[in-house]
Amino acid sequence: MQSYTEENYLKTIYHLAEKTINVQTNAIAEQMQTKPASVTDMIKKLADKGLVDYIKYQGVTLTETGKNTAIDIVRKHRLWEVFLVDKLNFKWDEVHDVAEELEHIKSIELIERLDEFLGFPKADPHGDPIPDKNGRFAKTQFIKLIELTIGDQGTITGVTQHSSAFLKHLEKLGLTLGKKIQISDVTDFDGSVEILLSDKQVNISREVAKHILISSNGKN
Image (tube, rainbow, N blue to C red; front, top):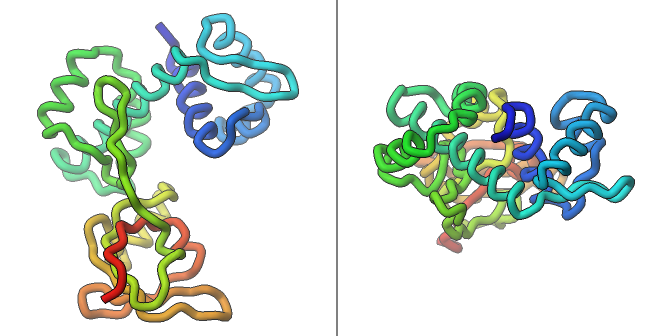
């Protein structure tokens, strides 16, 4: 049984490991908003429990047990986000902090019933895949909006930036999950993108475009 703090560390390491094999303690400290020395102490505790492998100056990796634990936490977090949006009418920019608390509930039966109640969803409100009870993720194929060229069209399937400010910005523009878009123009000077969305033109910056995920339908 892990403490809330230990679970938060495992989840953080899991997400950081999606970008690099060996996760550095400084990166964990930055993500957890704590001191590197505190991270080192926690990593040693997790290593003693067989949840991580740690070699000084080389970084941290999750053991198989640690990875499975982290995936289970991610699963609970994303299922609760679906519940909050679909059943309690939270907005997609409001659910993260609440799900951070709910993800630590230990009851396996509750989570299995929640999954069934929601219809076994494959993705959360931000488009992130939800693993099944065996830790398997459904295969998804998408590209970043910034990689599309003029004439390309597709459907918004996810985002890689989950801050409340970013999600509110997208909602204000009408760029939410499931919306169909087509690239009208790309500005050479700053990489900004003009999008056709439901017969209206929407302009977004390159910074915004690189955080929107699209299932591409090719060119019109």
